[in-house]
Length: 283
Image (cartoon, one colour):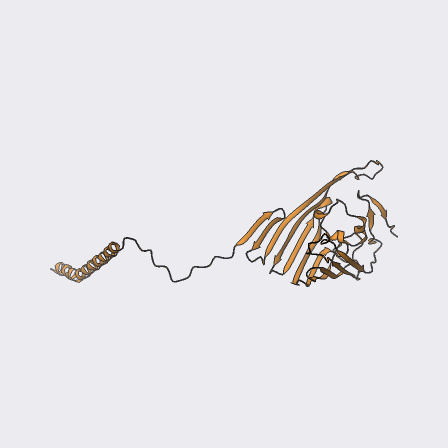
């Protein structure tokens, strides 16, 4: 009797809920059927009110004869990778030469890493592994505040000789002229530079450690510094004239160099075949 009462209690309690759930499901099915029959095209789900997240700016990658280039979409950040190899051989008719004078050489084996950060700051790092040695030729940061004013700091070519300022990959001849041996090559220092008059007048003015003629150094041998100034004008630049590539400039450098007995800091002069024909006597 007790079991029958308990069972009857659960039936009375749960039956209204089951009936209500059945009626609710039936009404939903009927509404769904009515909606489907009234419109043969099934409507897509309503779009969310939250806006779609905008995709991040794309990174552009390019490769051409100038190397590999990775840059941001606004070009404020760039990285360029390239390299060059120069090989030559030296052979002479005269047999009275020092051992090793006739040989094949890997003259230059250079990797160039250069780029831009925050749109106005350029950098360049260029090691050279030619001639069986490793040396850092270029390593500098260049801040371009305005077209007429910028600051470069690090190790780079001293702005004296026009031929030296050209890259060997753009030179017309394999060897450079003797004029290159009469001025400094690369040095460590700070330089102010810019272009005026619609890029028709360029100037450089800098302070450097001071290197011997034709030499490249990474540190100063004494406390004195060299001052270098250069002005170069291309008055017909941009004009449709036969003289549009004509340029005229002047550069000066001054400083006091004092070597030591162990390192006299004096240059040696070589022929186009890279054979030394003159050197100073060490005292």
